Amino acid sequence: MSQHSKPGTPFQIDLRRLNKSVGFVALSLPIVALMTSQWLGNCDYVSLSHYYYYRFSGDMFVAALGAIGFLLLFAYTGLEQSEHESAHWKMDRWLIRVAGLCAILVALFPTRGSGCDYAGQVGRAFVVQSSGSEDFFPGDAALFSNSSFDAVAGFHLMATFDDGAWAWIGDIHYGAAGVMFGILAYFSAFVFTRIHSQDALTSHGKAFSKNKKIRNLLYRIFAAMIVIPTATIVWVSFAIDPFDPFFQTWIDARGTFWCETIALAAFGASWLLKGRFYGILSDA
Image (tube, one colour):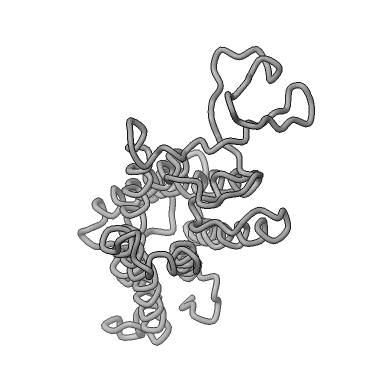
């Protein structure tokens, strides 16, 4: 990818800073989730996606994925093609947009179930035809309020998503997450490993520099760290019977959470490497 903005754009885009921004946000998400579990006393959710349902960590979950989504969807379109770009340049641009859109869908369409049986869980919902919290009564749900117009309904909003008319919301979440991780792995394994600058070549211009070879090895390792955990989640979800003892062990060990964390960490590390955060591996 070129380091330069298209001619005539109202501002200049620094691709390395952009890559580092995406990487830092991706790395911060599981860290914030773990910190909120310890500091705010909420339960250890079975997946990273279930942190959507808790105060503060839910806000950070939506904000982080939204930031990643909008950066991937819009920021990379302002770059011009360099002389070293491959014939896949246009396809890569569309793929990065799809990944950005998927990140936004993951943020907007939550996962199924509560992920935890905890009284502090909150439901995120739009309340229509209500003139304030004093007139809003969520049925059998408890109403937590600090003031007359600052109330949160604490009920298992997504508990029925496994079946019925709302099941499609969880399907969008899972599908978008899978496509997003797949595209991110593709970029790490095949896009970032290409030649994007003359600096990545030896003085003869016919072979990769030493640092480029190391970076390419790391990119492929990061890609594997995205694909393997994602594939493991899919395998457990579709191939393992929920009544199988292994499935319960998986839930107790928070297998989905740790797989998602590994995949996100690899995504973040790959983008940080592309942004030359690790200066010792830079060519220039």
